[in-house]
Image (cartoon, rainbow, N blue to C red):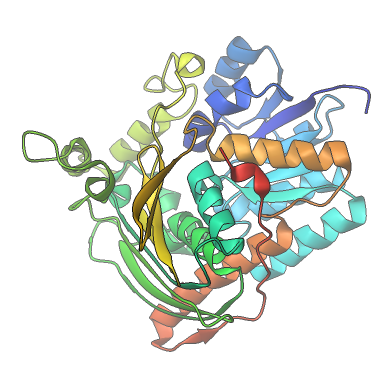
Length: 405
């Protein structure tokens, strides 16, 4: 191509887009040229912010001659449909996690991308934050010996954030496991080499007015013999930020106070329609959406998807607010890592490098996304059946040197 920038089309202008937009807009190798959404207010805001092409159909946007890459941030059940529309139009795809809701759909996406000769990246996951990628690099290069155990805990208020009706319907491919577990699964697979052997898990659904999983506890065994535990509670009690940033002077963390506010907010909606309307207002273009979105300053400390500790033969590693702590027989040392370039920037970098060099993506490609979905579906199946579920679609993790500071 003659242009030096990849032209980006946004499929969906919801809450996920709000999180990604500051980095999408700031990346020097991309230009946001188009967006598609069914909400007129979102499209009007997009035209005001970017002056690009606005479509009420994702399929129509995919045929734009001013789009090279389609970034899919639509509800889970539409991921395969929208990815296939982009791929068949010859566009590269960055797809939100999970890759799809079935392994059959994953296969269709992978085969279509191979046939059309385009790149398919499964991202929008904090596993691509620089601290996690550096942790995977240290482990993969054997700096502190062979990995033996990974443990990850995430306690959050996710269940008590305002939701649309489809987000509370497990039959729509939503829920805690499908929405949040892909991140923890990605992290565990990256730190463990990639190939999970089996899954044993238990989920709970305790909130009467929110009939989706509120927690999961998962035990993963890997082909290497390594074991990993993944724990997530979204019931808005304890907050795992306390384990990373500590408790404030008043005896409670700001995050824990936020959990209380989340519960109070949900309790204050008289009807599900009131909650849905509130959620609608927080989406891009809504009256409650951030007005200074593109003026936000880069973060000065790392975001945490819970606390992850990787244990190796000669030491342990975990995230710190400014990078990584490494614990060995010589004591604790800290590796500083730039926190400003989070997972969205990593996704864009990976796609751009693959495009410039005409090479496969180094990681988080279609087969990787399918393998992560297999584990997530295994968590749900294991909880239903009470049995250990064997994995058969796993892939290796390829170390990325660019994770270094």
